[in-house]
Image (cartoon, rainbow, N blue to C red; front, side, top):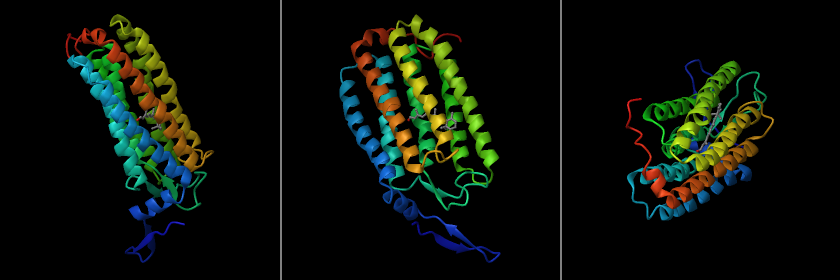
Length: 275
Ligand code: RET
C-alpha cells in the first residue's frame, strides 16, 4: 500500500501529495513492473557495448551518422528505464470519472516512457531516413510529426480531469502517427529503392510499422485506456515491443551498414538538393 504525504488546502480539506518515494515503493512492490524496467536496462547496456563494437571500423561520415543515430536508441533507453525504475518518472494518478480504474485509488503511471520516446523515436526515424537516402524536408516532417505523437501521447496519459480529453489526445497522437506511417510506407520506400537500400529498408520498415502499431493498441487496452490489461502486463507489453523495435531493429541496421558501407557512403546528402 502506498503512503501519500498530505497537505492542507486553503479550504481546509486535505489533498494527498505524491512523493518519489511513494512511486518507488509501488514499483518495488510489483515484481512484474520492476522486472519490465530492469530487463530493458540490462538489454540496453549490452546493446550499447555491442553497437560501439559493431561501428568500430566505419569510416564514411554518412555511415557514422547512421551509427550514431542507432547508438542513441539504447543510450536514451537506459536513461529512460533508469528514471522509471527509480520512480522519478512514474506517477500515481487518480483516473477521471468514467475510466474503468476511476475510484480504485492511485493508478501507477510510468509516464516517463512517453517523454523519452520523444528522443528515441526521432533517432530511429533519423537512422531509417538516412538509410533511405531521403531529403531534409521529408526527414524533418517525419521527425516533427513523431515528436507531436509522443508529446500528445504524454498528454493523454497524464490527463486526469476528463476521460474525453484523454481520448481526444489519444486521437491527436494517432493522427500524427499516421503521417509518420505514410512517410515510411509511401515516401521513404521509393527513396530507398533509388538509393539501392530497398531490401534492408523494406525489412526494417515492415518491422517498424508493425511493431509501432502495437503501441497505441496497448495504450487503448492497457491501464491508461480501457484497462483490460493491468499495469504490470501493460508495462511488460511496452518493454517487449521496445526490445524488438529498438535493440533488434538497431542491431539489424548496424550489421547491414557495417557490411555495406560503400552503398550508404554514396547516398545523396540529406541536406543537398533543392527540395
Ligand atoms: C501512444 C498513445 C497515443 C496514440 C499513439 C501512440 C503511439 C506510440 C508509438 C510509440 C513508439 C515507441 C517506440 C519507442 C522506442 O523507443 C503514444 C502510445 C499513436 C508508436 C518505438
